[in-house]
Image (cartoon, rainbow over all chains, first blue to last red; front, side):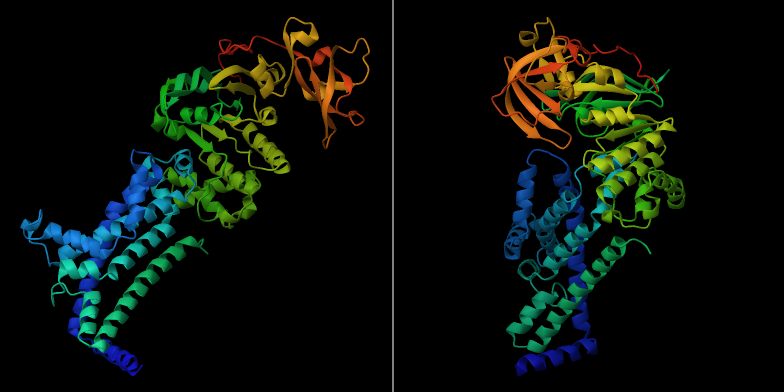
Amino acid sequence: MDVLLDGFVQAVQLLLGGDAATWAITGLTLRISLTATVIAAIVGVPLGAAVALTSFRGRRVVLAAANTGMGLPPVVVGLFVTVLLWRSGPLGAFGLLYTPTAMIIAQAVIATPIVVALVAAAVQQVDPDFLVQMQGLGATRGRALAALFGEARLPLLAAAMAAFGAVVSEVGAAQMVGGNLAGETRVLTTAAVLATSRGEFALAIAFGLILLMIAFAVNLVLTLVGQRQAVPSR
Amino acid sequence: MTSRIGCRDLRVVARGRELLHVDRLDVAAGAVLAVLGPNGAGKSTLLRALARLGRHHVTGEVLLDGSPAGPREMRRAVAAVLQRPILRRGTVTANAAAGLRLRGVGRADAVRRSVPWLDAFGVGHLGERDARTLSGGEAQRVALARALAVAPRVLLLDEPFAGLDATTRTDLLADLRAVLDGLDTTTVLVTHDRHEARALATDTALLVAGRIRQLGPTEHVLDRPADAACARLVGYTNLLLPAVTGRLAVLAARPEACRVSTEHHDGDGIAVMGTVRRVVPLGGGTRVDVDTAAGTLACLGPGGEGLEPGRAVVVTVAEADVRVLVEDDPALATCGDPADVVHSG
């Protein structure tokens, strides 16, 4: 119990002290995970909306794959991305393994099925005749789609939160394709793993706390934005 | 009289099956056309094909003011109200303004132009309410106000009263009639309820299996069904076959016009012998189903209370209450009053 308490106190001191290395790790974590989430959204939102709104061949297969992908173990993703980026692998020529770019690729792969599945669910919960009704009031197809996304903004935000939460907290893929190189690819999760294995519990707890605060801050912002729009003005 | 909206050789095909084929339809400016049909007849399909909405494959021409119109022209001219009032998040006022907002009108202007329509439909006092807290009737009133606020040249109504209880529906029908009476807007109402057609429409088209079977002034179409399918639609559900009437043609009668009695007097009009199958007490009277040599007849009215199943009875209908049906032939598509243009009331 003392170990935990001491670790906690030291962690807070470390954070308040403004350790440069800690802040660098935090900044890199945010950059990688946010970029991966944005990429996943760019790929996943149109795909999820298409799955929900159209009836193309293989639509259900995509949905089933996305639902399966929501539980995709990061270690498996890390394994495949590593193989792809390996020096003698198909994409080895780019020399991306053990770089932040490799980590972004792996995390985007993890986040995309989550975005697809949750966006499809978000869009499907809007009335199936919503687009027809908007167009029946004079909206163009584009405007009607914009209205649809506006209508489903809360579940869409939830999809973004879920995707970001999944990638910022995963350790398997980040470790495998990033390599946890100090100052280059070390993120909060891999740093926490390393510190724990060395017995530096205070440091590990500090990383854990930062991770929790990031997750909380991002979710707080998204929730506030969503709720502000949900309540009618005045 | 010029046609506001119409179509020529309009066909809708889905998965290789023809859902709808309308050779020719014209509705005049300011007129209200009811499209009456059973479930699955293609009513909504016709409405969406006219508005160029939806995903079905549509061929043929939609005419606006006599000229062929594409999706862009129709989008500007048309406002639709669907069976479920699909409102967006936000206040009633914001929802009423949504149609104008979708057409690029500024927020303040859109609100200013839509609020009078909320008043016209008796929901002006709900302006600040969250649209999701409205009752079904209130929500449908907001949906109607939202559609009319864009000042549509053509208003399309897809069974907007279907989900409402009887009182709410009657009130809303009366209010909508009052609103439409003062407008130049052409309205096409799709419904399975002949009472809605009678309450709102100057003209009525009967749609069966994707084809218009009969088209003409509402009173005429509702009272002079052309064939058996049309007769069923407008409430002439009892078919009296030649085998039991001794007449040459098939006759049809409303259950309300059929009287059941235990003895037969001459001069009662048409009389058919049968036996009582069942007696069902209803609010306004009693429904007696009578088995005859050629099918079952339903009789609705007072005076059936004492009857029990198996009893031999006579069903009588006055001559004035029966309608002569022509052959049930789809080729006789406009066997009602053939009218090139549906007339304004």
